[in-house]
Image: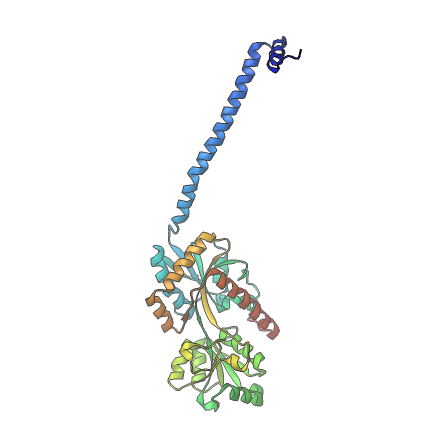
Length: 358
């Protein structure tokens, strides 16, 4: 007759004459202690993790807990600096922390840009960028940072289009008339720029390629000398931002032939777009905020939210519009796409035209 399993187990333990009963009890005790210790450790770990989670969330929500630094890679008083300060003042109020402006000047904005790229990606260093942010890597040889790779876009702040302007003494009133004149006179026609590599230079080079003309560049040391020259009929034509040009246009000192926007601009409803004559042509001056690459997405989202809320403030918007800018207020993704497309477009033009500042 087959013994019941419990009987077999009892007989087996009874036959263990070489293993004393006390050893068996000790083994059972050790196993029990091991199981209890293991579960205790796991449970303690779970409690520790549960305790850490609120602290991590609390640390994130506490941002910012100290003043921020906004690197402006140009001197005080310039267009970049003015826009940055207007927005930074409102942003500081919303964040509840001071924003210190650091005018890190040198090499057309390269020094400040490279310094910001090397900063800790913790949300406490921001960089104000303008359109030359995407052209400098192609104009200078020793640029260490890459506009696409080394920065986390936060928001596009504003944009401004450019006007193709001429002095009344040139004798043309329409875009097609100027193009015909430029083709007839060739490089005897000249154009003013605020300096080699500036937006006024590159935009006109793009227009030259698009229109099939070849006026000669006259580079001035800044926008003010260039404007003085064209208002005084010392040069024939210039591509200049709307905010700078319009006071002279309204005063009758300059004629605006066309605007560089792809679509009609409400404030310039009577002015044709260059793209109507030369499809696909478009240029814009723009400004934005970026942070060093690797800045946590939660911080980027917070900065974007507060920046857009700042731009929505009527007082801030009015101050920017007085400077000749159209308020944008984009998502990080929209600014990222703008940086990518502008980098590719201007990089191609600069290489093909062999434009360099060194």
